[in-house]
Length: 273
Length: 280
Ligand SMILES: Nc1ncnc2c1ncn2[C@@H]1O[C@H](COP(=O)(O)OP(=O)(O)OP(=O)(O)O)[C@@H](O)[C@H]1O
Ligand SMILES: Nc1ncnc2c1ncn2[C@@H]1O[C@H](COP(=O)(O)OP(=O)(O)O)[C@@H](O)[C@H]1O
Ligand SMILES: [Mg+2]
Ligand SMILES: [Mg+2]
Image (cartoon, rainbow over all chains, first blue to last red; front, side, top):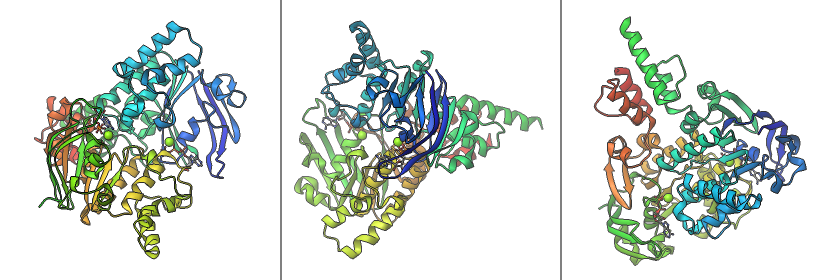
C-alpha cells in the first residue's frame, strides 16, 4: 500500500516545529530506510502514518485514506508501528497475550489469529516465552516482543523505529530476515535506523532527514556514498563504502561481495599496468 | 592494587535457574577504559549492576565472591554510599529521567543539588557537561519532549556531570546517530585520560577498537576472552559465538581466504583496513 506525504509540517504543542515541509511518496511494496541525526524528525514523521500525530499543515495519505479522517484504531488495520521505546507499546501481562492483542483487535478469525501469532513468535524466536511477562525480559527482548506483536497484525504497511539497537548479531540477522519476508509478501516497509551498515545491506531506497526536511532521497548506492552531505545530518557512510572510497575505488560499494569484487578488479588493473 | 577487583563473582537473580554471572574474575586499573561485549543475555547488564551496587543491594538473589571498588567491598557498603563513587547509565535511557524537573538543565543539575554541591559550582559544571554531549541547545527544553537520542544524551550527561570515580555505561550510544556515537567514545576516552575508570558495554566494534584500552568478551555469564581490542575483536572465537564483528574484520577474513589480504593481523578500524588492503 502506498504512502503519500504532501507538504507536511508539524509543530509540537511546545512550539517546536519538528517537520518543515516534507513531500514524499512511498510506493506499495517499497522498502525504505530513514536515516538522520538525533532530533531530525524521523520518529515525528512516522508517527503521522498511523495517526498518532496529525499534520499541522499538509496531509498524509495511507492508500486512499487521509489520516485526518480516520482514527488511530482504524489506521491500525493498514499501518503497524514498532515504537522506538518498546515500553510505550507493551502493556500485557505476558508475551502471548501481547502478540495476540493486535490481530484480535483487527477482528480476524480465530484460525487466522492463531496462524499469525504462531508465525510472528517463531520469526522473533519467542515461541518458548509466551508465558513470560515482557517486563521480566531485557530491553532488547522487549523490543523483539514489540516487533512480533506488530508483524502479527499482518498490515500492508509496517514501520520499524530503530529495530536493531542493542541487538546482537543473531537478532540483527533475524530482523533482516523478517524484513526480507515482508518484502516477498509485497508489504511496504519503512525502517528508521542509525545502523548504516544494516541500512546498506537491507534497503534499496534511503531517505536522509535533517532538521525536519528531506536532505537526500534515492537509491541506497547513490545516497550512502555522499559523505559530505550525509555529514550535515551526522551520518557516516557504511564501513565498506568508506573503505572503498579510501582505497580509491570508482564505484560505491555496499556489501562484502561488492567490496571484494572491486578490490580484485583494482588489483588486476594495477598489475596489468 | 587494582581499582576494580572482582573475585570469583557468581550471581543468580531470584527468578533465574542458573547463575547469570559465573565465577567472574576481573581487575581494572584506575583510569582504564574497558569495553564489555557479548550477545543478548550474556550478563553484560548484570555485570554493570554488580559494579554499580544494584547487585546485590537492589536486586536480591544469591551472590558469592567479592566485588571491590577503590578498596571498598560492596557487600560491606550501602547503595547510598556506593553511588557517590559509581555512576551507572542504564541500558534503557527512557527510564532514567527523574521526573522531578521541568527543564533539561535542572534535570542534569539534580544529582549535584542532591549531593549538596554549592550553587555557584553547579551552573558551570552542568554547562560544561552539556557541551561535552552536544546538548547545550536543549537546556531549557522539557526532558519529556525529546527525541530518543536526545533523551539518551541527557541521561548520559546527568551521570557525567557527577564525575564519579567509576563510570559504568550500559550501551550508552544505542539511540545515537553515528557522529554522536563517535563523540561519546571520544568524551569517555578523555574522562579516562583524566583518571576516571570506565566500564562500557557496547556493540560498535570499530569505535571500541579506536578508543578502549581493553575488551572483555562475555558469554553465558562467563568471560570468554579478554585482552587488547584488536586481539579480542579479530579472534575467530567471536565470530563462532554469535558476537557482532566489524565489517572490516569479516571482510578481511574472507579476503584472506581468497589471497587478497596478506597481513597476519585482521583489521577492526578503518585505518587498519586501509593499511592492510593497500598491501594487497
Ligand atoms: N513530545 C514532544 N514534544 C515536543 N517536542 C518534541 C517531542 N518529541 C520530539 N520532539 C522534538 O522534535 C524534534 C524531532 O524529534 P524526533 O523524535 O522526531 O527525532 P528523531 O529523528 O526520531 O531523533 P532520534 O534519532 O533521536 O530518535 C526534536 O527536536 C525533538 O526534541
Ligand atoms: N531482573 C532480572 N530478573 C531475573 N533475570 C534477569 C533479570 N535481569 C536479567 N535477567 C536474566 O539474566 C541473564 C543476563 O541478562 P543481562 O545481564 O540483561 O544480559 P545482557 O545485558 O548481556 O543482554 C538473562 O538470561 C536475563 O534474562
Ligand atoms: Mg526517533
Ligand atoms: Mg543488557
